[in-house]
Length: 529
Ligand SMILES: Nc1ncnc2c1ncn2[C@@H]1O[C@H](COP(=O)(O)OP(=O)(O)O)[C@@H](O)[C@H]1O
Ligand SMILES: Cc1ncc(COP(=O)(O)O)c(N)n1
Image (cartoon, rainbow, N blue to C red):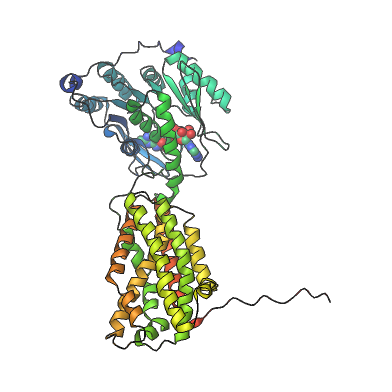
């Protein structure tokens, strides 16, 4: 059964002026965002239907509006019951919106029954938004019907009124009255038949196929345009069709053609699918993360959370033998010398990672801060450390430069370098404990040492407690907080982990002044028996 045989293709109306357009549409009244309407059913778990549409609209900078066709009691496991308020009430909702608001694009999803479909068709005859996208929702992926049996013809009539129709493979088959395609070429041939019969551009969705890719294709009067994307290995695909069609509707008023809107919507959806698992919404087939690409407002500052995470390490650092002995002046000169020589080796690497942070930094302020810090840490290494080591340990410049990093020092700097192979945010998170725990220890030392007159480590203790250092710590924290605002939940977790590991390395680094870790001697071998 071809669509053309059962449905005369209705004349495609030109975008007509709505009442609201006539009232509001003076040439100067350009809206700051496209005003996009969803006409669909509900999903109280927020992954599909109107709730998904509004999130997809917001994700694409559109002003979202919604008219409800049906109230659906459903969750990530499936649909329980459907309540349809009725076509008259649907028309009242539609008129309430269009009598007042200019609609730049509309997305139609679940229509539920024939009367609703007819009411929408009648409304479209009166109020014709410039872009009409129809997702011909019939059966949820869970297998439950979302469209009355016998209402298919009314949906076919809606297809003929739409500019773009977005069927999945089973829906395409129902619209044509043919068996579902099982191969991509067969599906493309069906999509072409639907386009010819209805006049609507068809966005064919390949989510129901198997394979490495999840392709979609636009089939219209021109050539077929295929959009490939890697198939994401996930069960969390609830509402993908709703979200895609809503994103396309939101983008279309700001793109030259459907291809431009679909390309961007699909790229976004693939990212949303990848991030969906981490949402942990429900125990069934969960939703995608519509806002995976956006900064999250309202989170606690990264530095606050990170500081709390290392409460144990902070306590450990306070109780360290090295810090106690440094504060009361009983630390052996050799122990301090060992620590300082390692610190010089550490600072040489730390400076490189600071330079890397400067290179990755997104703002001139951050670039300047980290570049300055890189220079400063080299200066500290060159002057203070070498002076002391020359005076107290008889080490000249060459001797300080050729100090081998201990296993503890090497583990710390390797961790920093590894973090700096990640993002800017991870790099800054890994660098931060060196500032922060150092400033914290400075506070502890100044408090414990009391009067520094005659204290053998007076110079060092006052250096640790330097207010300029505390200020630099605050600045570094604010850069980490800013970077975390733009991080995905997974990246924020990597930042926290990098911060935590650096804190552990800080502890081990200070304590090595007393522990003196050494590399094992290379075993002597090779003698043939
Ligand atoms: N596992 C997946 N990985 C990547 N993209 C997918 C995946 N599943 C679905 N998609 C994409 O999601 C969109 C919706 O597709 P589909 O699942 O076929 O429709 P529906 O949700 O209407 O059944 C399409 O762009 C499709 O390519
Ligand atoms: C209100 C509403 N509209 C559409 C779908 C289809 O989404 P999916 O096929 O992903 O279950 C749904 N479950 N609920």
